[in-house]
Length: 84
Image 1 (cartoon, rainbow, N blue to C red):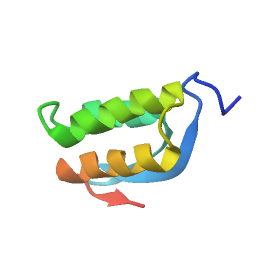
Image 2 (image 1 turned 180 degrees about the vertical axis):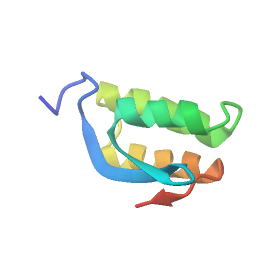
Image 3 (image 1 turned 45 degrees about the horizontal axis):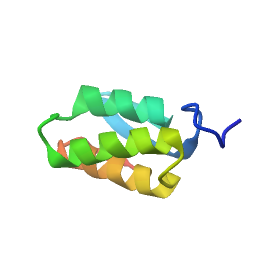
Image 4 (image 1 turned 30 degrees about the horizontal axis):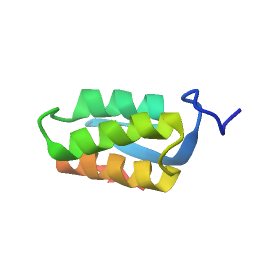
């Protein structure tokens, strides 16, 4: 179920501005990874940290709050507006 390493582990939802008029909400490693790839510069250290954390989260080796914080930091670093 939600506790094993299948990519189904969830975080408290995070909404970010995808376009001028649309927000997207994510709550799992797959959604976070997709958002990072679409919104962030892969050369940004915050992106690399968050991407690694998403993988570790899917594997069950980091906490939901840690991956959530690093995800928000990466989006913020890329200039994306985030609603917590």
